Length: 307
Image (tube, rainbow, N blue to C red; front, side, top):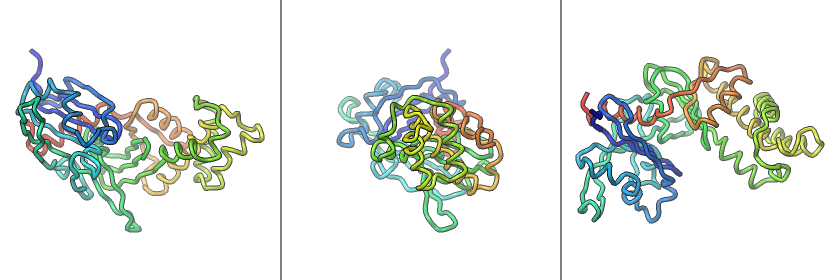
């Protein structure tokens, strides 16, 4: 007999919507995704985007709890929800409910959706930092330690006693894209194929120099003088920025020399794992369905799912 679905989880980011059917023990029974991130939903029709992906799941159980994490709770999303403060674990990430209408297809049925709040943190200088979605993945991964969630805006997160106590954001991926597409550095690039030797050279330079404005120019001059093939410039620049990110993170958190758990897309996670190793650190890959596991744990803490 197939286990009963106890929770519908939505991991809704800027470019992708992922939906999970989760049973009462936290096991993912079904998974779907669509390129329906918040920036791609026309006219704010989030109910329509969700229906397009999981209409049959919604129809199967009209009382099924729905929990959502990620940028869907941001100012540009379906409904803005406030940030929670640190330290925070599943108990502090109590979801905020609002009622959503699903239109004529569902007889204009209104049903609650529970949005997981993001987290806000001010560093020692009083500068705020925020996250939405990563807190749920951390809750799903479980365990204390240092976490790395690579992406356009990489997050480094410290968990102590099952609660997030510190985090920092690095605009590594977005900076790489901007430099590649909108600066003179991109003019020396021939393709973006991986080049392990060039990547490692960039990691070493970035880690040692911090990828200062002067060091960034080496992505042009090394190719200009034939010290780096033009086909390796993209890999070198990627390594340069990732190496600088690692160096800065090590300076910000005391125990950055411990095991670092990486949660993210497989290819990018493996790239960071390789860079960490080159910098004398150890990285291990985290669970693939961390978001769904986190949604289940937060739902359990909030009493949305029976134990």
